[in-house]
Length: 132
Image (cartoon, rainbow, N blue to C red; front, side):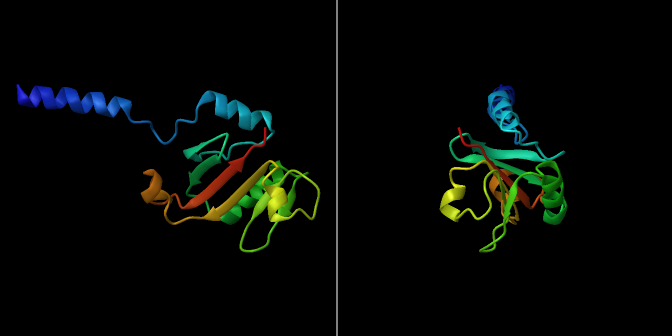
């Protein structure tokens, strides 16, 4: 009886845990509506419209950055202070200005697997901020 109860409890708990790949449809629509494509094969890790959306991939940052520069050809690159941020706006934006602009950041984050329970090879972080 205890085994059956434990099995039912574990199955119930497993069903309530959100999977890392579950980007809510409304959030996907928000990102798409801003004209920002999602990197193929990237896994949603966490986020919301208020703090941005964090994705993980096993692709090298240089590969992901090149892909975004090709897809968002009209966007401007902010490449200062160890940051790589592609943003929608006028050239010459400051870090403060970037907070009010749509943007994509790509960087290495060795902590992603531990923080978000993604595969240990997924250490490239993609952060998408959409201003409403």
